[in-house]
Image (cartoon, rainbow, N blue to C red; front, side, top):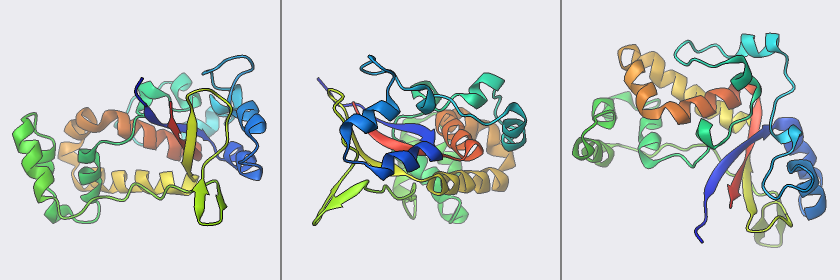
Length: 208
């Protein structure tokens, strides 16, 4: 059986609760999972408590169609929760070095052109630090859990995810004519980070 890695968006307030006792597996599972469901997220880990008015004011980028229900729903696999691909890191690097990143190549449908653009990228983007939940001596640990075939090695704070969205916005603003192609190529990632930033969310790095 393989291991699936993913980002799980959660409210920042829920992350604060988890960090109070990250080594208490029973409490961690009680906060994250629905009772009796081995892989079902709790209501607190599934939907935001922000009002429609607050969400309307926060989802401000016009390039994505986001329904009212999607604004309330915390990011799932269909909203781009798999770890970001290498070429997305190159795309984000254009926020800091637009002259050194070949966006046309990165957006090409030709795999050879994409590969050439990756090779000439001048830097890899930092997608935000991954933080350890607790430390024992020199060893760092994530959150304890009793859920089978499951692990939570690290997390990212709301400000980490907002910083990624800020980089995306800078690239989009610098290349308005490419915005449609950018959304077509990186739609799941853009939707995920826009949602996290708009909701003020944190996330967990999860292994299934």
